[in-house]
Amino acid sequence: ALRTLSTNGAPVARATTVGFFLDDARCELAASYEGFVEGMRRAFDRGGRYAAIELTSEALARGFARAWPCRVGVFTNLTHDHLDAHGSPEHYLASKAQLFVSLPAGGTAVLNASDENFELLREVLPPGVALRTYAVPSRGPAQGTPDIVAKTVTVDWTGTRIECETTDPSL
Image 1: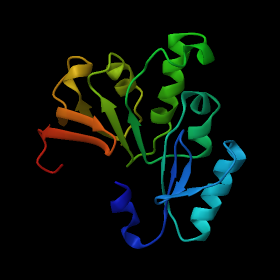
Image 2: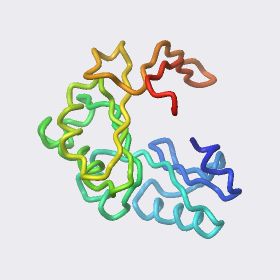
Image 3: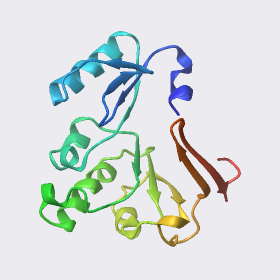
Image 4: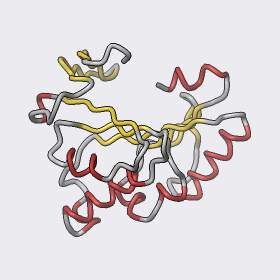
């Protein structure tokens, strides 16, 4: 997706728990909201108009999705990793749901149909938001008929490779 977004020659900002990047170049920035804003400013000043952002549930709980609206939101899973920060599974899920509640009409939600919270997240999508679904059978049975199903997943030092099957020929 980053290669597709960067075909216009401008850098794509990428903010992850690993760091902040403009395309593949790492930016030495503080791991803070101020560092994030500085990174976005650098991308914008160089002509960048797109960003791929890994949003934490803690940032979503603080209103990040309303302050920095996204056009596409992707839900991978809900684990026990951040329960200490949220106090309850319900608060944790409600925090993640903020990403989808804030999507604009014309935006897209990508939801994991293998996660038990799939139906709840689907229910909070605003009108006019497109829904795309995927499933990874090793993570649980899919709910409904997902658009994309992972057939094989290979993880090694060079990256992650996923062989998929799709029910939608446009994908």
